[in-house]
Length: 207
Image (cartoon, rainbow, N blue to C red; front, side, top):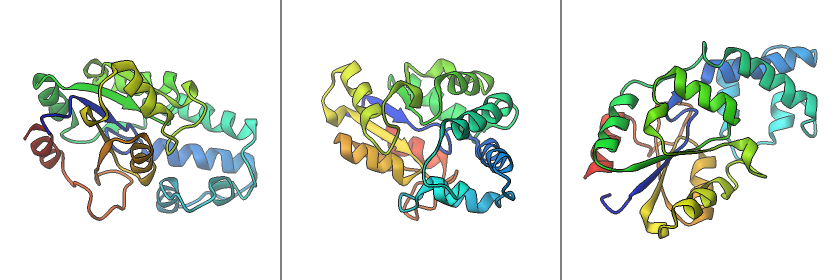
């Protein structure tokens, strides 16, 4: 992996355990719609499933409306610092990669204000050179736009980039952008062949 100079991390489910705040925010929207709360396990299973129609799965509607997004962001913005935490070993991994002169970036489907606050609250913001968020692109992952923006910013060949994420959305975004990807499975992922520890990921990235 010595040729991978720029590493693109997903945030939720990869760097940060945000399962609590995401599930609670979805159920906050459901309460506004007069719906019963969903089990957290069902929510997490649906978040990364590319085969489901998310508005229908989570809220029983055909398409999101502005108020649904505003309700979600209202809860997420209020509680994301309290209800998120770094996965064990992440801070060590980021320090090791920084020491090895890797350029670290993030492509996240979270909004910038929330992402910056989460990274700061969990004391890992200093490791990242570039952050691209959902409110800065037309389409979030699995669309490749975020990845392509990062690639254009550094103007390196595709072989120099590697995406690390926990979901099929991450892998699909990387595939469509034409770069390699590694899946991890300590967050929301159910990908069987994914890497299951930060120690194993560190060894792979630094070999």
